[in-house]
Image (tube, rainbow over all chains, first blue to last red; front, side, top):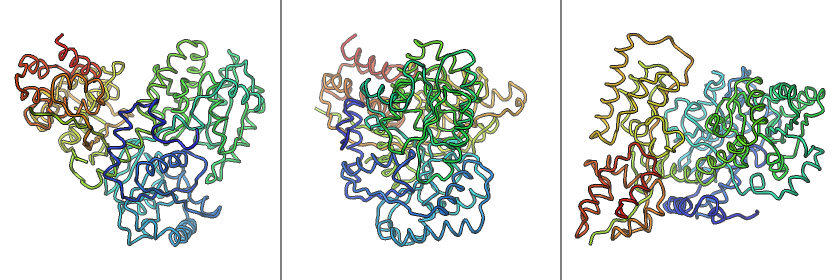
Length: 412
Length: 213
């Protein structure tokens, strides 16, 4: 459904939720918000900003979206920062810092006027984090939105990123475990999915079947699907290991679907490793799809007996809520934001090893009725907690609460 | 005739600025140090999110004691602390500290350190905003209960008890001020023991009371 407005969500969340959002937006009318990240395509942040910018404007809050631009060297550095924040033992050299800072200086020349005059600037993740220092005449409140699990960062990387973000007016983390001590309020806002997007809307059975045909996947075999960038932290090799254990006793197929995020230089190499590991089993299909193949991803998740997200480290994993929203039980790594979305035996399972994943997948495949009940539970759980309306409400509440730091109850 | 303009609210969560607690002693220290906003969040907000399926313990400290300390005795004792039966957050703090310190004395020494998910102190900020609902009669209240959000119900029926200083909810206070107030109804609403209910159950029970059942 293109050109969605908030009214389209009435059948999904009900009029009361929309009324809350409209009331919360009223005091912000006339304000200007700018979001900044590193890509308009691929990855969860871009997906969120696509709808958030649109709906804030619909609510009468002027909102724009800027991108930091850079060359492959810049994005190699930011990937290093990203991996280091997630705990990888990376090597952050002075040359890399120089490349990062000089690229941001170039971006600041282009963006400074817009950023400095905005009432609220939301900077997403480490790629644009250094922009604050380059905008000394900023008039508004700057918020650093960290989508990454930074619970155990590489110390050198965190020291550097901390220098970039400690002067912000506030930070946002997806869950308490991710928050680091900073000299400003750290808000907690989990991400969300858009239930009406191409990736999550209802599909005709024919569309689902056609997708399987197009991708040369069987329709007569229970499929298990993981949708994620080909990234080591998503543990696609661990998923294959789990699947091979399942295959010892059951017929099933495994589909590993990755997209191409323009700010992730490692994807191609990991995909090759996955293809190699899958080559010995003709029921494993590693598939690289373009970043905008939302309907195909939707169809693949809907055609699955269960959805997998066996990450080793994870910020949130929108794919978990996507799977739950499609009434599929989800087997997820017991890490990060996945723990927020899955309740064992209620809507899926949290696992700590390939063996654990195999154990739970075998159970789900052997208990289709229980699986269906867990799927129904999952859908309602997402409706209550992880839809974009809740997310939008959280942001509007945050903007309001920035102005009265320290008070528990504020009247809008 | 006095009217009651209904409000709604939204919440935002922030880190509480207190070191995470990985054992009982650290929890005591954190509880001594944390703001009353944190106490409110961890003891009063769980009722907002409680659903039948996960209502085994009534506050975040009790849930943590059960799941991470694997100490069901402590979890039960903490769960019996009703924050709405105490006058003020400092009394709540003292009540919780009493339970924790007594438990520490009873178990003699701390169990060995375990790899736990630490307890993280969080505070919540409530942003209140108006609705277009104005009550002038108990019939209006009955109609409103069919449509107001969980947040609005929480704000007027539960949050008001801590905000008003007299532990009274907005509905019974307002109904008491209406001419020819039904004192029995007012008392029944005021006495409703919601601590063991979900918000859905609170809503249903209030409707029953208003219908005279």
